[in-house]
Image (tube, rainbow, N blue to C red; front, side):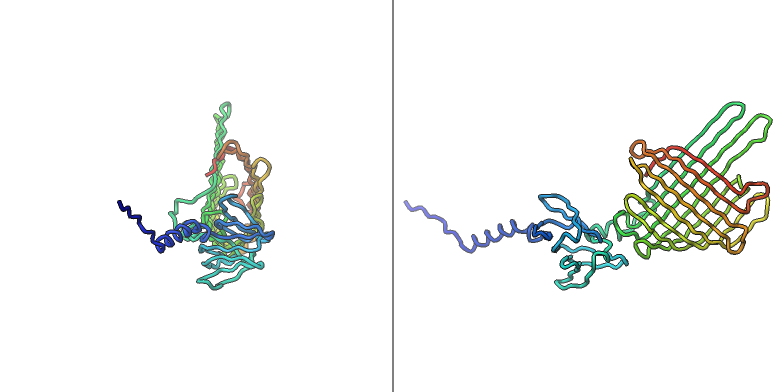
Length: 364
């Protein structure tokens, strides 16, 4: 009896072995490689980078944040988008060595940067979704809503309501990306009514609204246009409208504190209850500061000085400070002190208007 044994094909075996070897080595061949100054190496993927360092994802150790100064070499196999501090855009593989970041395009160096010149290095997919994509005007808003109420029943009946809305919408959406533009809207209102039998009813009716559009020319400097409206019965002011624009500078911006100054030139129209309307050109200098305190308590303050250029008696100042104390998740307790000074109120009204509001705040 004869049994035939199939012959092995050497070429087929070699091809199968090479395929298996490529499958095993593929993750490493297409991985990004990072070398520390002490010689340690990591293989994985670059998540993102900025002027301070890189965030690198390795299979064995997870995501790690590494300053540029601790790296000897970094080389990516994938294409990334590099955004400079001057909003320049470069695409290519990223390489780091000898204190420089190189962008490689088709195997050649297309651009060279120092870390301080780089605003962000991110994946092209993330760039397309979060930076370069348009999204509806009603989405992407962040901020807070607050409201408070006080009721008294007795010889006198007192009702007082206060509320505020502070919203902003930034492009791009991700807070760690360099800003491109920002839209802000704010509203602050206070209404009160004191009534007593046989006595005139006393009303308090104050609101301030502002809309601003910022366009950044660098990470810290921006141009803006704004519109403001103010109504204050306590000063005899029916409605004040201001329209203008100027330049702003973010001096400090970190997780703990922010400091910003702005200067603008605007046209103002004042309408009073008991005197002729006035129109004039004015300028404003505004500073605003915010700081996170212990237990995530947030303190903010702002001060604005507004001299009138074409009507010297119409100058005004405004100051505000607030304290937000977290209660539970998105709920907080808000206390706010607002002081408005108007040098030319309606006859019989005081120049200064002081408000103290407190209530519950909901963060969006």
